[in-house]
Image 1: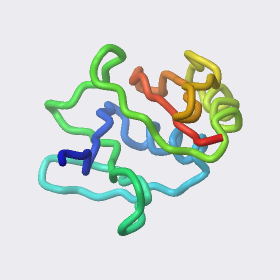
Image 2: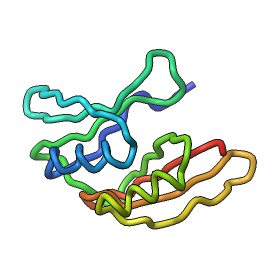
Image 3: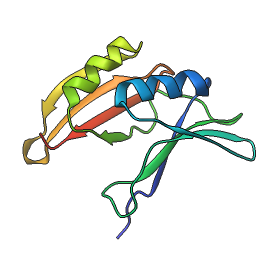
Image 4: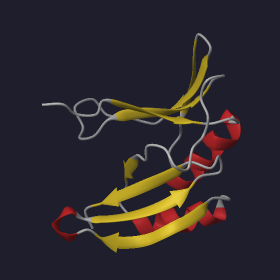
Length: 121
C-alpha cells in the first residue's frame, strides 16, 4: 500500500511563516538547515497516524495557491481558523462535514499557500 510519509510547504520568508504556523497551531516548529534547504519542521510522533512535514525555503521552492493541497489534522478546526485570521491568513472555507469522514476547513497562509484542516469532530 502506498501512503504519504512527508510533506513540504514552500515559503519565501521562513521566519514569518514559522511564526504564522506556530500561532495558528499553538505548536513550536524546529529550524533545520539541510544543504541549501532551510526548514521549520512540524512536531511529529513516532508511530502516530499521518505523515511528517516541514515549511521549506530554498531557491527552487515557490508558494502556490493552485498546486497540491495538504491537510493538517487538528482537534478544533473552528479555533484554528479563528487564529488564522488573527495571524494574517485568510479563511477560505469554514468548517464543514464530509460525511462519516469527519470535518474539513481551508485557509490561505501568510505565504499564499492553500492548506486544509481535518478533524474527526
